[in-house]
Every structure is written in C-alpha cells, then in structure tokens.
Amino acid sequence: FLLEKASVPYMNMLNTWLNAGVLNDPYDEFMVESRRDSNQSIQGVGCDGDDWNDLYHIRDIHVLVNSLSDESVKHNVLMTGKYWNAVRDCQYSDDVSQASNSMEQMDVDEVVSTISYNMNFVTVKVQIDQVYRKAAGALLRLLLRDFRLMQSLRTLKRYFLMDQGDFFVHFLDAAEEDLLHELEHVSTGRIQYLLAMSVQLTEQYEDDDEPMSSYRGQFAPLTAQSIRCTFSSESLIDHLDALHVESGGIKVQDSRTPSRHAYGLANKGLTGIEAFMLHFPVISFPTSLVISERSLASYQLLFRHLFFAKHVERRLVNIWLDQQMMKELQSLRKALGPTYCLRQRMLHFMQNLIYYMMYEVIEPNWLELETAVRAGEESVDDREQPQYGTRNVDDVLDVHDEFLRRSLEECLLTDPDLIATLTKLMSTCLLFSDQMKRFMTKTKIFEEKTSLNLEKQRMQQQSVINPDTMKTNRALRKNLIAIRDERRNRLARQTARVERELTNESYKRMISRYDEVFNDNLGEFVMQLKEGRRQNWHGENLFLRLDYNGYVTKSMGMD
Image (cartoon, rainbow, N blue to C red; front, side, top):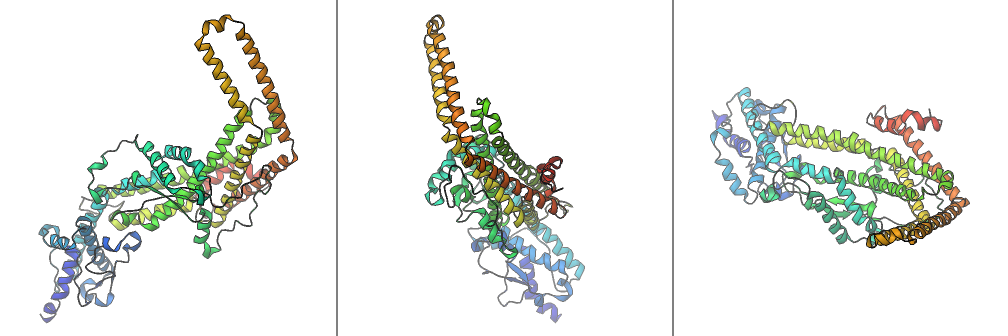
C-alpha cells in the first residue's frame, strides 16, 4: 500500500508521457530525461534528423525494475512520448500550451489505460506496446500524408539527382558561359535567375495531382520553386579530400595529367561550374527529420558529382558536333583519325559512367526506398504492424539514410583511390575539349561555314522572290557554278589550314600525350575496379561496361 501511494507521482509522469508526450519532471525523478528546455517545442530547437536521436534518453537509475526494466519496454516508453511530442508540435506549432491541452482532452479510446504500480509486467508491456503503435502511426501518417514526404523526396530526385534531363539542358544552355568563369566573377543573382527560368520551363509540362495552392502553410512539401543556387568555396575533390582525411585523403597532386597544350591553357582557379550547388534554404519540421542538413549535404555531393560528369559529357558531345563540320575534308580523314578515336573513347567512357550512376545505382536504390516508404504509408491505418516497409518515423530515417549511403558508395564517392583516378580522367577529358575548341577556332572552320550558310540563305530568298526569272535566266547556272567553285576553293583553304595544324609537331605530341595519359588513367581505373569488385560487388557492372570483352585489360597487358 505504501509503495503504491509513493509511486503515484512517478506513475502520473509515466502516463502523461505515454498519453500526451509531455515530460513533467520538476525534480529529475523520471526515467526519461530531455536534453532541451521542457517548455520548448521540437521545432523551437531547430530539430532535424541529425538531432532526433539526441532529444531524449533513458536514465537507467530511475527505471522501475519490476515492470519497466526490459530493453524493449524502455525503448517503447522513450519513443512513444517522443512521437506524441512531435505530433503535437506538427499540429500546434504556434501554441505549445494549446497542444498540451488538446492532447489531454483526447478520447479515452485514443490513449492507453492508466498504468499503475501494482500491474504485472505482461499487462504493462501490452499497454505500452499498444500506445507505442498508436503514436508511431500518428506521426508516420502526418509525415507521409499530411506533409507529403514522398513528393519532397521526388523533388530532390528530379533536381539534385539529375533525374530531370531537360532541366540540365535548359540550365546549361543559358548559364554555361557564365559558370565557366572563375568563381569570383560569377554573379549569383544572375545564375539564380537563370536557374529559376530553367525550373519554370521544366515544371510547366508537369501534371501535378494537386495544385500547390491547396497546401496550407507548413503542410506544403518541398517544391522546385524553392530551390536556390549556392557556390561552394572548394572543389568537389577538395571537399572529398577533407572528408577522407582520416584515411590519408585523396592524392591527386601527384597524378599524371596532360602537361602539353598546343594552343595554350588558361590557368583558371575554381570555376563556377565546379563550385555550383543546389540548396533548400528552409526545410520545415517534420520533413526536416528525414531531409536533415546531413542528408541534404549528401544530396549536394551526389549533385555536384553528377552535374560535373554530365558537363564533361556535354563538352565532348559538343566537340563531336564541331568535328562533323570537317567531314568534307576527305583527304585528311587518316590524319584526323587519332583525334577522332581519342575523342570517341573519352565520350564512351563518360557515357558509360553516367549510365552506370543514373540507371544502375540511383534508380534501383530509389525504387527500394520508394517501395519501403509506400508500404509504410499504406499500412498506417492498419492495426497490425506491417512485416515489410516502414513502421515508424525511425524506419523512414533508416531506409532513407541507407539509400544515401549506398548511392554515395556505389557512385564511388566513398573510395579515395577510385574518385582520385576518376577525377584525373574527367580532368583529362575537359582539357582535351578545351584544346579541340581552340583548334577549331584557329582553323576558322566556323567562320567559313557561317559565311557559306549565309550565301545559301541569300540564294534561297532570291529564288522565292523571283522564281520565274531564276528558272529561265542563265544567271542561275552561273550562280550554281560559282557556288561549286567557291565550295572547292573553301575546301582547299580549309584543308590547307587543318593540314598545317595536323602536321605541326606540337599538335602531334599533344594528341600523343593526351592519348597516353588517358590510357594510363583508364587502365588504372579499370584495375582498381577489378581488384575491388570482390569486396564491392556494385563495381562489377561498371567494370564490365568499360572492359567489354576484356578490351582494356588485354590491350594494356593487364590480364
């Protein structure tokens, strides 16, 4: 009797915590301890997924030995109150006291019966498990349905993980020239304007199930219109070097990179395109539980990696387009062969790398994440816990963290040796693209092609304006003969200029050096994949793509 009466304050604290998520412990006697002000809401401390596990903890010294000492019971007590606390803050963030009153006025059916000291262990465990499931389902329902978590994650996938291909094209068509400048000369305001325009062009063709006007304030999910541009103070490789400092960092200073440039090379510092990132300035609670600052940093790492890889591929594709203008120079096809072959091998490498990351890493991992979250969303109204999928918010955090961890690992960002060699390969491709662009400028292929197109346009306009005269007059034949002669002379001039460049020893040594460095780096990269595929199975697909039929290993004597 005395123990029962003496336990009343403790049991009141337990019931208040389990039923309303309110921690009323003025003398520090309860088993749950808060690491924040008891009168401060979770949103008030800026809580996100990084701080979620540290909000409360169990004090074993204050746990009732007879009924609450079991580890599963202690865990459920801790999480039940924390879930109700988060639900309260989601619904009544403007007035915490109103939340407490509202929770205390809940129907009896929505809370567990009062737990007393004289109850046996089985009864206590059953009632705690029951209210735990209710609290977990309530917060999960708020996060997945009311706050539309999956829609926020899809926005991240479409833009941060480069799933929306037309956005990349629109944006770089408008902003590439500005982003190629050194970072100090890049206007953030102008880039933000071009980013917003690109997003608007992309989003206007999307059919939303629900217009954004239907969302109420804090219940709105993350949208593309909320994306902002920002610039890092260091390159991606420097950032990764700092992350891997404990394992020795990423050594790219001693790497073999082409040092011979026939047309000079601008010694640029950090450029806008190397530092460009996407960012969400504000992520409201409880979405911030899943998309925390640490998670957003992981998305930004993946974005910078994919963005730069796609930029390198785009530059090589542009070189291929430029070289199509020299197809008429039939006599130089043999001399241009080594350049064409090197460009195609670089393009093949980049396209296979991007395909691997987009469709063999991110997409399968995303499908697993989406399947698990959807299973939890469909089961929030079920009384029984689902056997598969997310049963509570912590499960959502776990599957999302696993998605990011696997994506970072399988995109090679967690392997210092692989990312160092990959950086050398992409840097070589960019340097080669710069040299080829200057080669095209020096040979004046563009200028003559433009003048020829203007002349053709003028002739077509004349034939439309006066078709009868053009058909019956000898001037038509003279013009055609003049065009053929001009084309012959133009090809002769272009052939002479291009041949002069191709026979230049400096150009030959440059192409030979680029080919040697690319081969060495590619061979090193393939060997690293081959050695690591026993431990990291995800590299098997990329290895087989790059070394199809054993071409690389055989040609370099590595088999």
